Length: 401
Ligand SMILES: [Zn+2]
Image 1 (cartoon, rainbow, N blue to C red):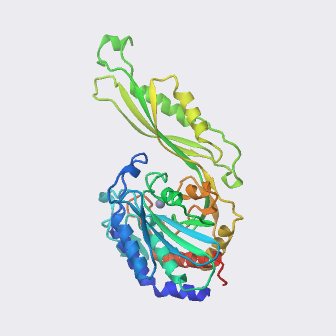
Image 2: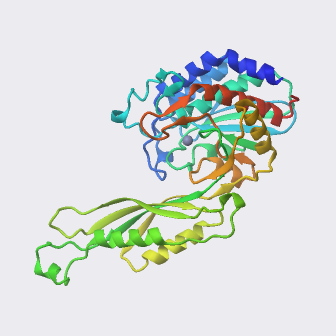
Image 3: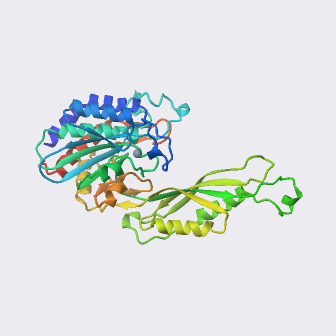
């Protein structure tokens, strides 16, 4: 049976490459902030969704659009049988901005050079969506009792906390027993740090820098230096949560001020400064805990905190069936040991894990330059991962190898 699945992917190899190219050639840049992106009804991912929908139709499936906003459709496609269990594949259709100047090729060309397919989203993660579609096709006619559901979702890139993508599908009543999120590379990610992001608005008082009142500090407050002091203390702040799973050993909650903006003229004491801060949360650090610690630190300042997002840390036990089956099949196809690990970046996986679904937070083809110029995916890895997805789905859903 394994040979049959592998043959099917090998036969479709050219078509799989072409389809990945097509998805890359269809821009789906999502430049918005997490607190606004899910309210924006622009057709950011719509053409990608339509291409995926059409391909699934062409393969004889009955895909559906499920949308919270009319221009931002998710695609869902069920390979339904009578029995159990149900495995879900999940991937996002949007990409980060391309910054076109620094690319060797047009980021939407899908250009192939040797074993590399270049383009924004080639690696993160249009290739994984394409692999999932062809994996579905490879097992469609095989006999197994379980169900496979493929979901291509909108609005992940701003912070994997959207109301209109994965979370919306789950709210609509998706019931599953395990999930694979196809985030990049052939390492099995079973846990991820959480995140807390906020903007700090620090107020000062404007006054001429040459005035004697400022010289004597009887008038004026410098918002930039105030914010800078906060930035330094934030970086040093130690946050301790409850105990973490052993896989997180050696890791910690990291607070990084990442953007600072303030001032209006070179000879005026700045009266306002904005500081953006990114926090990577260890398991056990709750929203209440991190908020409390930050508030304690900024309490004495004339400052306001604007929350941008909170995503909890998430973890799947390595002894879960989906982890074991994926690892076994990945090692079989890749002919080497495949690592299991956790990461400081997060994906939509936490939505599933929060609902008790054992979830692979990331496993997809290998490439380089994620979120950077000259992003590319390795073509041979694409073929291998399509096979791994297909065999894993078949075996997890009760097929006999
Ligand atoms: Zn991604």
